[in-house]
Length: 206
Image (tube, rainbow, N blue to C red; front, top):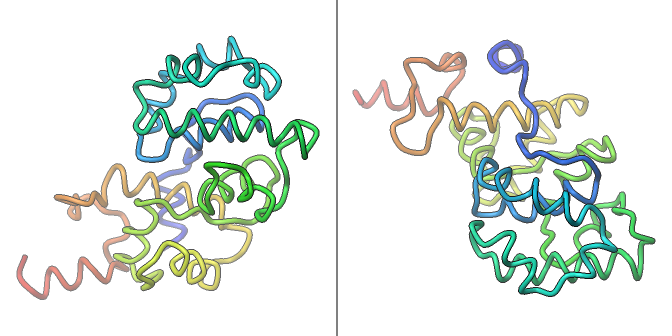
């Protein structure tokens, strides 16, 4: 199954555009309940004017909100991002920390965001479970947990450690392009032979 996903999505990588670890952290916070494509329309101007934590600390919340207004929950995100920029300066020398525990202390950073940063910035072995990874993993039978945390744990047990980050992206691509929440394109699926959900649908005559 992993080989088929690799063949189907050899280019799989984060769609978020960034140049520094801090910018990835900000972009990932913005991506909560918002598409990566939408985030990428916001961040070029934001990062051109404010590329690092010190320059973020110079902004008021209203100024940051003006940049990110088209992202969902922009007021709360602006508040958390500015608090994160302050905390990075006060406690981490303006560097993005390299442990999940430290990252999750930052305002607005949950386990999924922390895992994205760990995988991309620090080359750590981590699996970030978003809505696509959660849905596709359960349909394929890679995991059966009913929470993102449980699915993450099951994937870490089921998959070779060195494949975690790459498989994360391939599951996202598969969820976006084929294994959609509504009207999945099972007829075009490269891994339907391994899919528990597809077998159940065929058995039920759907």
